[in-house]
Length: 554
Image (cartoon, rainbow, N blue to C red; front, top):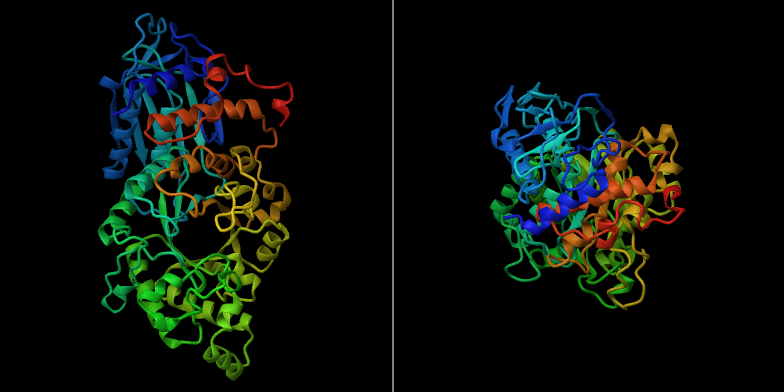
């Protein structure tokens, strides 16, 4: 149950930033406290409108369990705002009451994927407020915006302005990459992360589920069931847990994209198939891998592809999303060259090590595409010489800090996902876990670093036609259940707004931060642990109390 103190803080924050005192009932007006900011939002001329959750009715043009879940969450949110009542509060004089929410959805399909229409229209009016969308997921986003535009009034009423919102995302792909192999995350924490992402209309959970340190997934296919190799015996995801988690994410409009990284980052495969992993745990590890333990799949061994075929067939059936991420990052050719049979294979085929990687990626891509899926891959494979024949069916995730790489990969005909490490990696700034110096991607990335991503200013409008969106990434060498949510939230929202709304050239730090402070408190109200953005004193004393004269121009 939501703690009353949390509701009090959210009420107070809405009151202070909204510019009204606790003994009045004033709706949001000049600064709608919405995150991300809508494509189009306009304020009507009517008097304030009230809404009483206890007597509010919802009517929908379709029957949908996902939409019903969204309606239930909306009512719960409204009630949470009203948990703390103010005896001196009274409803605005002559206010009309919103009694009905009419939801008109064109399609009852629950299909969720890269081409799902997420647009919506919201008309807040009395006695009926109207939502219109093409899909149930657009309707979910309309309900999220309806929640965010509410202000608490009395112990039983919320208050609104007459808003008209016409909204759609600038980019269809807005997500988080999360590594659950280096350290394990429980399903309840993963669900909390989904809840947090959805609160800001982020729609992709890229699940980096296996790596060198562990393969924490139950495998049902008998031929490869011994691939399962968790760090601790109890730290793995059962098939039923994965299915349940995917369903939970879908109910929030969040896609789950699996990544089983290969050919590097695969030492954990050695438990089940030692004959297809080269240089397993070889030392000194830093000669053969980017981090311990060393180990890579053998591209010269036909059995490698048999195992991959079984894995891909099972996981593409388990994960319904159109995208399947095949990894492809940080291949170390020195690892492969420790194998005499591999070197002989290179000579027999007149291959370079780069050719071997290209051969591997071609074989894996063929397996994935045979299932009807679209391939996602890290930039490294292409930079090392791999070419994907079906470029229109290949999405490249680019993490480079050299922005010419973005242009290079786009020029080769690929669509890309932006994940530049210098501004979108959340694990940076915690030090180096192997020698306790600084990490390779220091310093720490604040929400503002993420929001003001330099890639937006580097790429041309023509190049942006090949950008489908972006993913903030959290690699988990130093993160697990105990600090995951605070590592992610609210910093990840620095990407939520520009990838939904587009980069705003009239960016104003003070007004953006005011909206983000409210969004952070909404997260806490939902039970998601999120770090504060300012001292409480700044919240108590109003929006300009902690800003310098330079703040607005940042």
